Image 1 (tube, one colour):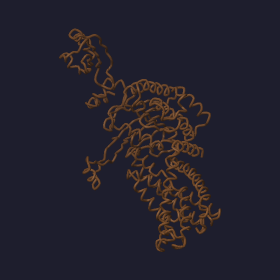
Image 2 (image 1 turned 90 degrees about the horizontal axis):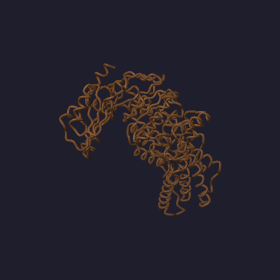
Image 3 (image 1 turned 90 degrees about the vertical axis):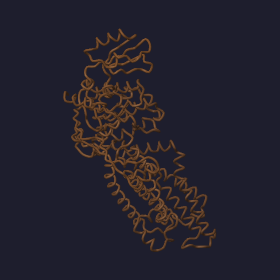
Image 4 (image 1 turned 180 degrees about the horizontal axis):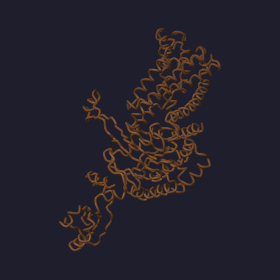
Length: 333
Length: 264
């Protein structure tokens, strides 16, 4: 469905020293630098799968999506998506894909969403009856029936994202690229969008490639995760394997009656304190959980504690600080 | 065609949101330019209706510039900076994904504006003809139709040129300086400020090998009844438009390889 081999992209940029002197210097002599945004990248995504692309800013996630959608021409390598080479921008290919950009509106800002939908109906050559049915279904699923005739610029960010999603799904794409679909949204709006994507995928069995900074998006939607660091694929596998990268550690949160000083008992477990030192988060190996918890309960004024799996954000942060962890995980996978 | 028509309707709806701004952009520069030229020629003739410069009396010159204004109102495009900005800020990404190309989108935008501009030009012509009837004595309706037809083709020339300059953003990032220089040079070389029959003969003969005389001078002269053969003028314009579009195709293919889709 989606396959690429040795796909890479280099960008040429020029360096400019700060200040007016730098501007003058760069006017006469520019020093160009070739930056590798994506290093030779291989991936195979079967039809109907949702895959999460994870990585810090500048890792190359969006460049990959741009190459997959045909926005950017790759510097080398091969890519085949549902039988097409995206760089050729075949109209038949463009009718089968959709790109949702959380940071960029594709709707006409000064017009109601319905006007943009009608335009898209013509672009994608959707029959009138199918179009009406589709708008009705999607509007109901997203609960935006009353927003379709409101000018896009007057919608809230969450509302706008819903109509953006709608506009991208009108033509029933076979492959959907979601680039940060929940960025900037409040928690409830994020949950609604996630729920919608999950339901939509369940109903339509389309292939989805998602990039997000919110791990909750990836955790809620994807079973497979691809982790990119500095343009290179560093992990490709099950999300549970990624979560367990740091071993079988548990995240335990202790709430104290009053402010507590640093305690030698806590130091080996990577303590994360809140501002007034009344709460601490520890990473405790599973086999020592009982012993350590009992010791802390005896020594410190604990009023409440709870245990949870290590959040994926913490896993990612640790992995970014120590990429060697990924190599062993990738071997196991 | 339905795609084109729907896009044109959306462009109109969008234009109507900022209608005063649009009207000022279309009419403002042309009117200002017209009054500058009228003042200049009035000073050159020292207000004397007896003096002749070349074949022109003051009255002929004012008539020439009134028709120039009408040709400009129809043919001049007013959004040459937009494509450049859209490429620089990565806004064209959307049209690389939709099954409707960037060129089609820009062309529909051009057609939607052209239709409005024709309406505005005809309205202005009606006002001018009723207010300054003395300058509109010697023209025939058939010549007016020929001149206006040429003006429409000239607008396609302007659109193609500005689209090409906009595409240079793939390399230059900012192209407005080039656009302004090109526009000013073409206005001068097309006879917009000084009729080309007042140019030295060698210069006028040199200009015959360029598209510039057909941009203003020929359409105006066509309306005034001395513009020559319509088919020759149309053939020349179409030839240059084809050349521009071949260059556009080449530049687009090369430039797209450099596009980074910024801002996404």
